[in-house]
Length: 149
Image 1: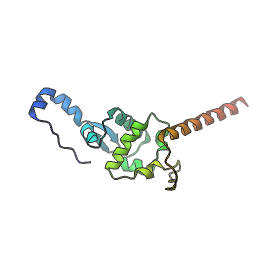
Image 2: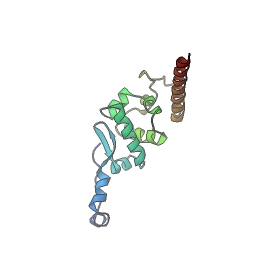
Image 3: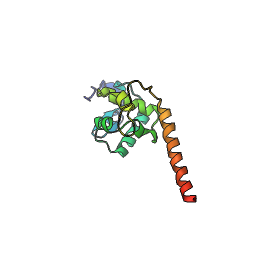
Image 4: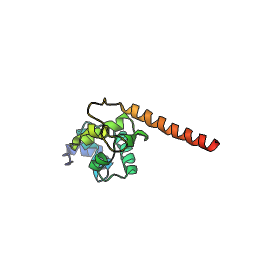
């Protein structure tokens, strides 16, 4: 994404100080080699910097190389068992939209990477999170039963 021109005048610089102004230019959302600072996020309609930092931590754990790599290799299920919530998903959607990536295709990918047919209803993110939590619990319960048997 091209850098957004700074609208800072000399009075603002003097009043706020260069240290504060530098923080506005530091990357907040980092997905592999792609990054966005506060000003760039705001231009995309994102003011949720805490959610952007959560997304940064999660995608780092996924080991993706870029936003396009995240889009191509993962789906919403990759976030379902993480700390991500709907606000984090909003941030990720804004980044994908800014890069011209198809949000629906990414959102509807199944575990194996296949996409659901267009006719399938879109399930809310909290529904995905509940499904994954229930699946994890079933796995734990099965392991307990095997150990006790």
